[in-house]
Image (cartoon, rainbow, N blue to C red; front, side):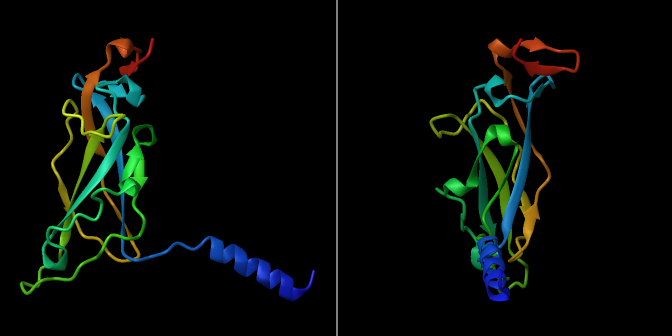
Length: 165
C-alpha cells in the first residue's frame, strides 16, 4: 500500500473521531435510593418508574443569565438505567457582567416518566452552581434521586437492595 493511501486512510479515521466544540460540556451521574435507604439499581423498581433523567441548566450572571441551554433538547435526557450522561460541547461559557463575577449555571436533574413528564413522587436535590469552560467537561457529583420501592420489587436481599424477587 502506498504512503499516500495510508496517509489518506489515517486522515479519514482521525476526522471521523473529532468532536465538535462550540462550548463546554456538563457530565452528570445519579443513583436512585428508596426512602428507607435501599439502593434501587433497576429504575423499573422505583415507584413511580423513572424512565429518563433530564439535566436542567439555568445561567446565572453575565451574558448567560437566565439562559436554559438544555430546554427542550433530547441531548439533555438520559435513560435512567445508564446512571450517567453528558451534553455535547455546546453549553456556552459566558462572559462576566459589569460586576466582574464569572457566570455559572444552576445544575439540577428531573426524573421523567415514560411519557416524558416530570415525576412528582421522586425527590431530587437542590440545584448546584458550577462554571462551564469552553472545550472542557464540567463534572458534577452524583445526584441522589429518592423514590418509593415498587410493590413488585419489595423484596430485599442481604445487601439492602430494592429488587425484583
